[in-house]
Image (cartoon, rainbow, N blue to C red; front, top):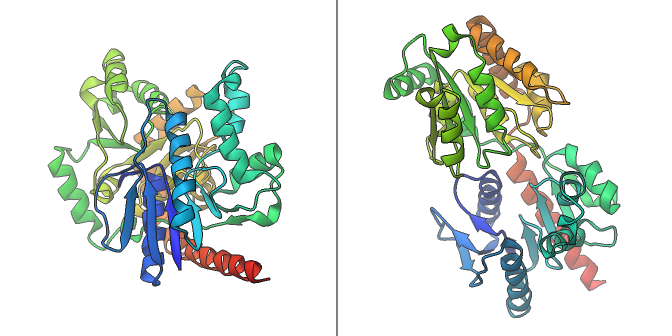
Length: 382
């Protein structure tokens, strides 16, 4: 069958984008025709992906997205697909929505003002979300975290049967390999880390949402004898200026580095001593699981949809809501100050990685796409 995949932009380091790429690749392997519609594409483009860069632009995101939507509505009339799968919310077009984002209406109602909710920006994004989740909508929803489902249902009354919960889909190259110790040593030599140096790691685009400010404050509170041997590397696609300035302001400039997205993430996971991820909100937090299966202890907040896996595995510490900076500070000091505890969290994570289903999301997503498409065809015949 011909599957139309819709997403606003593709770049190789975003979590949503990586999920799209793996799902589309499995579809292609199973013999389906892949048509991708996007506003921009960065990085490798497979020969069996027919990628269309939609020729619309606007300074304002909601206006650009609206033009994208209108262009697609017109184009797909003459270039129909058997089924459309969206990785962003696009009104009136989606048979299936892959729910990587948190509920927009929840944020608009709890974090924004009444004046914001009168704006055209709000009205467009609300309409797009309503089109997907409204009780009368026909869109099927692939959920990657159970945390957001009751929130969507609270605002839109979405029927239970339209939700399909997927397992995580961690790439198996994140698992600690047989030569993990050698790769760790090679990584640490490359970054000039001594045996007694400690490396904190944060991975993910959207530094503010991921709680990078919280992480820097916690690092600054470390006892001097620990801080003197601690480095903090952040990897992600975001503007580093604000946080580089902030780190310098609080005296962490020489300990702190921000790097753009890159391909050698597994080496960072093996070479670091702790992943810190005190997010303000996070639908899943795939990087938590990527760290765990590499044997890297995790410190994160409980708002992350995948935080419960860290607790179940006893592969780190999860900070409970309501968030307390003091609790984060104290927990970081304990985790960075005890090699023995870190070794236990490492071993627990590696053990859990070999027993839990953390890897099958792409295959199960494709099985659902095929099933929903078949059901759609059968319904049309009837």
